[in-house]
Image (cartoon, rainbow, N blue to C red; front, side):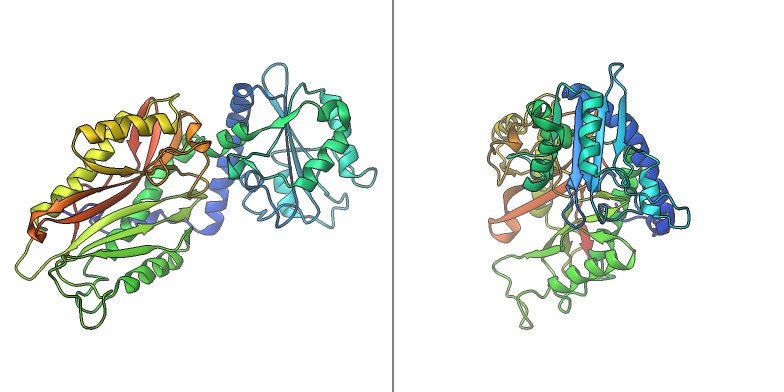
Length: 436
């Protein structure tokens, strides 16, 4: 049986598109998200208007996800985006863009923005704050959301200065209906559309393919290769493929205490070692976060010891338990409590610390355990449909072949929650990578 993640060829590399084609795809996704997700969420959260403001290099994380691929930052001057919910449930999108009238001077990143937002500002006639105040009075919202939050860092994007200027611009009457748009911002970031979900499996296959290469004799030479060698091989591979690592990878060694380390150093990989990696990459604006495990075969072995395989099976059982307790409407803390109770009943020594994933690695949404314990705030947010998570957890099991020594097996696999069901994106690790 083949090790998990090993493909018959490097066909996963064919999924990687040139940068221009990537931009076209992301641009299309953005249009779908603006058309579908924003109206749905503004109705759900009962907000009439959503105002987002950013200046270059001090961007609201939400604003950055609403800019087209050719606009890598907010405007050199200022970016203001306004969503106004109409009586029929539709949402009008406005911006105050400093777009010169002279056709000889085109700012393409801004013109792309105008494919999604209607420009309502003539910068030669008034400043953007006067324009914003006029727009608000025209739309007459009963509630206005701004991105400030004590709970969700990704929903806390407006600076104190910009918030003050917005409230001055709209005047006391409308400043009185301003409230936090944190749930709307989180909803925007966490909700995946069907086009994104169609692609997410392929993105995960790329992540699995890189790990399969790293945890193979192609990269690991027992007695010679160090864990840091593998770390930097992974980082270099991600870079060479034109992808982005959203955190520095890690590779750790777990070893029977009776086995002496290499005289060349404790981080030299030896036969009989269990290897663990944690790898996160970004492609087409979507992040992955994956932890897998490998076993380095000894000369006389053609498989890992049964006790090590049993530890991995315990990890899979904990994943199954978490799947059963993922229920729409429950909070992260409620799901954690239920899952840990079931894990204890199964005799597992378990820890769960699962987080959302999507447009960010540690993304917006509910958190199911922080270092294995409930967490106030982000853990009290409920589970919604069409959201993605990194099932991050570990189990500890004694290994008879190691004289009863404990082995911690940590797993992390990205999943989609849709239709009331958890779906693994590109599968999960159920067998150890075997390195000879």
